[in-house]
Image (cartoon, rainbow, N blue to C red; front, side, top):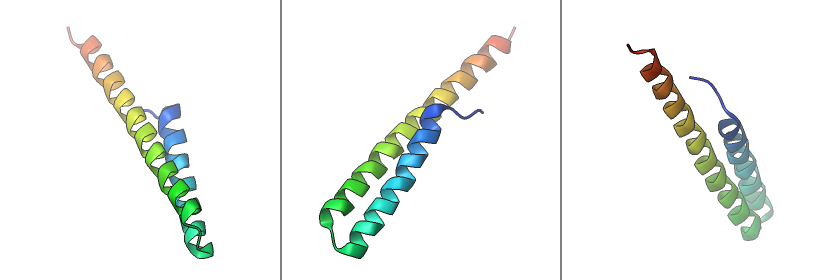
Length: 67
């Protein structure tokens, strides 16, 4: 199984969102916390989409190998 752009970008957004959420908690900004949570959700969705693309690609590759 390879790694694609959506997986990498999605996981990066998740991490950035977690940092933003934590920073919002530290400074007491509910707005920043909410933006951080939103970014985490966006990243999770993108990463899962990337995971699904890789799964499909692997299944197609396996199916093409069968006689």
